[in-house]
Image (cartoon, rainbow, N blue to C red; front, side, top):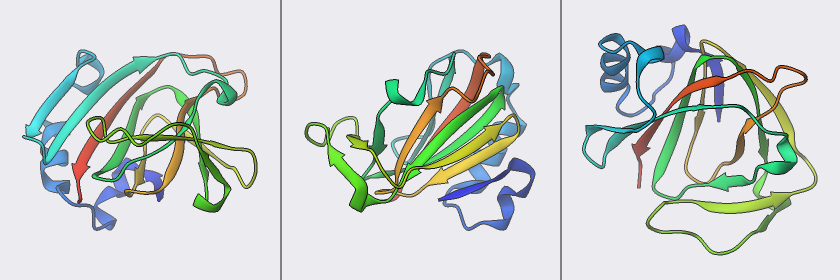
Length: 151
């Protein structure tokens, strides 16, 4: 798991990074519609999202098996949470088509404050709970979630 300001993204060995940087530099990210955009077929695509964050208890922890997530916040501030696998309880089965598995965690939860210009990177198997309300900052979030095929 990585949390950093996007200007530092090239410090990390992130697959497909050049294509991600090219996409960001050639698009006005704040104006992108809320949709999935293919960049390199099933190997790399981005989900553009705009939403109001919810209290953490209203969201679920998730993991992926095939894709890593690079989540880039272009507007707003939100709370993301992480938890080690030993503290997770599955909520249903893994969805192979959507590449997600939802979990519940009641302990060993770590908060990450992710602001405009920050990014997180979650490897497959790393539990994360994004889109959570941070304190009283109930503002609209605009986020690009790059899905990078790893497995």
